Amino acid sequence: MSFLDDVKKRIVIADGAMGTYYQSLYPEDDELVERAVITHPDRISDIHKRYIKAGAMLIRTDSFAVSGPFIESVEEKVRIAHEAYRIARDAAGDSCFVAADIGTVFDPAMEGHVFWDIKPVIDAFLDEGADIFDFETQTQTEGLTEIFSYIREKNPAAVILVSFSINKTGMTTGGLSVDNIMRFGATEENIDAYGFNCGVGPSHMASIIEKAHMYSDKPFIAMPNAGYPYTLRGRQIYKGNPVFFSEKMKTIVSLGAGLIGGCCGTTPEFIERLSLAFAGKKPAAKNITQLTGKKTRTFSSFYKKLQSGDKPFIVELDPPFNSDISKVMKSAHTLADADIDMITLSDSPMGRSRMDPMLLGALMQQETGVDVMPHVTCRDRNIIGLRGSLLGSYAAGIKHFLMITGDPVPSADRSQITPVFDYNSIRFMNMAKLMNDEVFSDDRIIYGGALNYHGKNVDAIVRRMNLKIEQGCSFFLTQPVYGDWDIERIALLKERTGAKILCGLMPLVSYKNALFMSTEMPGIRVPQEIVDRYSPDMSREEAEEVAKQVSLDIATKMKDITDGYYFMVPFNRVQLICSIINEIREKSSKF
Image (tube, helix red, strand yellow):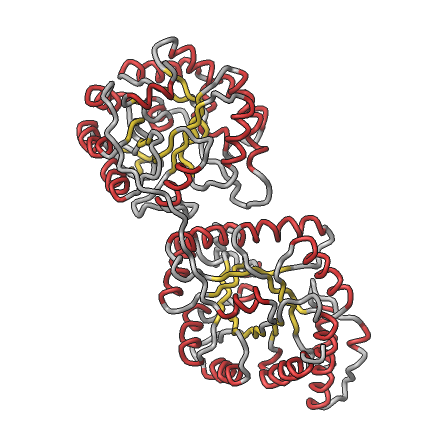
């Protein structure tokens, strides 16, 4: 009988933890557990045999880390895959099934495709005869479809298992909800069984599964931790109880789990209890929920303008360094009177602390009636903080965000200030995309990204833009545009990506300002002919008139390529910005 036939007809018991069990047996060994297949193969074989003796019908290779950053050398990963499978296969003999174990698969930076990183590992397992693949402790779905397809191409009969690590709230660290997981498992055609492992103990896993919708009759996996760890002498220790574990697994099995085992902290004693209680019994019938497409809506007038081809006007303001909001609120009311489409608030640019743009934005939006889009950087918030910020802002009425990685902390402050950067802007957008599917479906949030179009490698810029678009990025805001080169580069990027791009405009309000921007602002090009239109002895009024004419000239040049106008306010000259906007609107009918 094949493994898949077996797991469909009866409850199959898998093994327990390899890593934590190995560490409990050999606390003096500080080496990565996966390397033990090379340095101490007898130890790994012995652990496999202990689980088999306890009643495991499926054992998994000691190869969790071959997919992650813990082992840098591809050659070493491949060697571990070969050795791990040989040891498990020899230990199992004809007594149980063997699965090639592959841990968390995703590239946190989203810069390349993870598929190619583990392709040699997949090949190594296949060369050893692996026909069951267990992708455990996943946090994201990115890249998995391609990996599964590759395995199917190599061995159409291979069995693919995938399980996700969840926390007590039913989320993965990558932002996936339980419902996201259940839908992915049900709809991904190359998955044979799916479910949860790691992250929580049996009580919380039972509670999470009880509330989940089963969208498929595929076998369901449940492999919780023994409990929750505490730290002793630098090691994580799990103090779980096999009897309690087995009792809680009764609830999980009653909900339809057919492939059960244990993750961190579980030992052969835990598996023996499961074997005595469940081995050979038929899985309980699942309550299947019909899978339907989710209805999502977007009420944003800004978003609708972008989609219709109307060109919105966005103006950026800087939150104050202190608690006095009178000046910035006055500017916001002035912009509201000018009927702009959106105010955007920067998030501590240059790594200098300013008032929180989301809290200020909620107050500003309420008072002015103009939509506010705070910038949100990944520099200052971890994954928990970023998600919490989106939830809180949404509750306060903020539905638009500019998601950016963020300027680095100034070098002089790094001894006291620690940047976070759990995510970059692309990973952050992926979180927002998942939240739009799950928690914001009644009225989706709209988010965009910053576009630095000056880089020499156009292909790299295009690739990064496309990655953001794939993660739900609706538009891009650029740095200030001053010359023909900028416009030509933006037009090229627009042609190659199809992106909605709002070009930046920042009036130069004096000769000194123009000279500074042309010589000391990296990534911004101010042609000399623009600087030459100013003189040191100009009055403020004369300089502002030049600034207005220069801005209007640029707006006219970019009219065919820009999807909107993004204004940055120099030295709080809000009235100047309003005047330029009015002029552009008057001219737009003549464009």
